[in-house]
Amino acid sequence: MQIYSDIIESFPQELQPPMLKLMDRLREETLDTVKRSDFEGLKGVVTALAEHVSHLALAQKELAEAQKKTEEALRTVIKEQKKIRKDFGGLSDSIGYTLEDRAIRCLPNILQKDFGLKIVERYAKKKIEGLRVYMSFQLV
Image 1 (cartoon, rainbow, N blue to C red):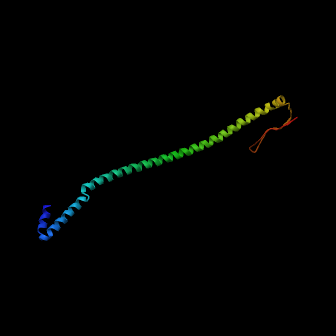
Image 2 (cartoon, one colour; image 1 turned 180 degrees about the horizontal axis):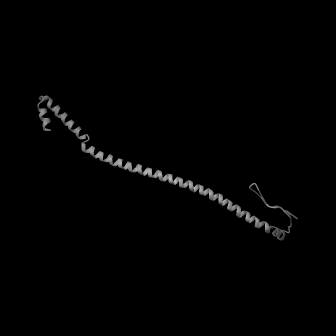
Image 3 (cartoon, rainbow, N blue to C red; image 1 turned 135 degrees about the vertical axis):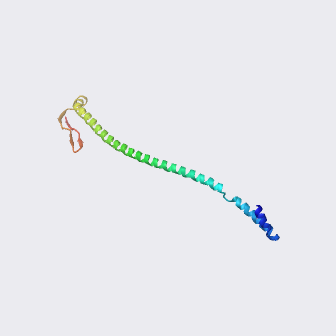
């Protein structure tokens, strides 16, 4: 500040007070400006943020890969579930046919014993183009 004072004293007497005011104001404004140390501190923060962003990008990539694997596993489960549904449907049909066959053998005796009905003619149970046709009876 001494150098500035010497310079201001070299001004005419009437200009010295305004010049001192100007110097004070410039000094105050300079105090409000960013210092090199502030800038270095900000550089450190930006570097740390860049590292965090890099880690987040890597984590996002890993999550995307995990999601692809999960989606593929889900597709496999869906295919297997469809296969199980089809197999179960076939099993259900097999059990149903077996029950029908047993019931048909017992039916004539039950009809005669419980209802007094006698079967005079049997028609065979057939399967036509994937459709089940039930056995029909002619009763007396």
